[in-house]
Length: 318
Image (cartoon, rainbow, N blue to C red; front, side, top):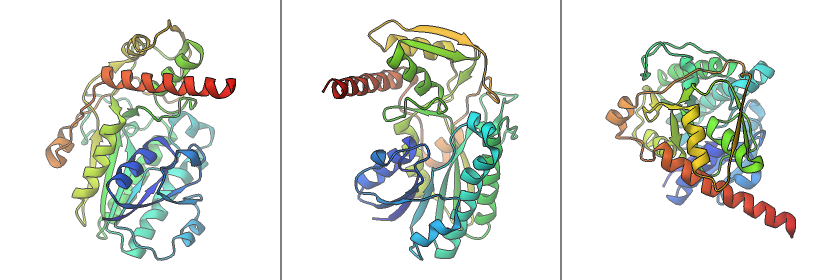
């Protein structure tokens, strides 16, 4: 079994990846500053360092400890917040990646898997989007992801096996429904469960590619297992299916046992109008394909969210 560093295990995707590896018997360490995650969300069994990955001093906690692979998932995770503080976004998403790559090089860690984003493509001219599509960032967040991928390429030339997973909209049980910057599915479902109302910023004709959390975790596992030295690889983690905002709202409404009101207003800065991606490359090279479609995934997520809401109400009553 391996010794793995999974950054950001206090968050949604990082926690799910860490849990997968712990269940497989790996030794897992996580570093998280808990800026958007929580200590309670870190899976039991993780060796935990609460620190900021954008600080060189953080790596003093690890010393010369050598990991078999680093899964870098921590970071500022939304396009809208990147406009509020571009410098923090750069530090959280670019500086942290550069420091981790330098640490991997120094300690002899052979593999780095990075959580990139479909945001690098902006509003693509052709659909579905392949990995060869030119970058066209619309947010500081997307610019940071592109910069981080560029550093991965440079370190791959120095012998580290580096893979960037360009995640599409990842959703599912365990997501923070109170965070209004982390994906349409959780934002809309969180509003519906808490208030019975959904406020949509932007048109209902916008669309996304929705990837269920279990499928995303499988992509991380396969990418780590197949990484090769001196090679940089980039993969879309996607379903190839276009789901409009209107369709997503319908799926959420049909998964809940009460009526949901929808209000459309304004827009958000840097919002992509629509994107869905091809997963042909990752299917061909890693034998990965999505297993859970949006209808089944939203149903599962809604049942989980209703259970969580019920538990909170019981806690208040007690």
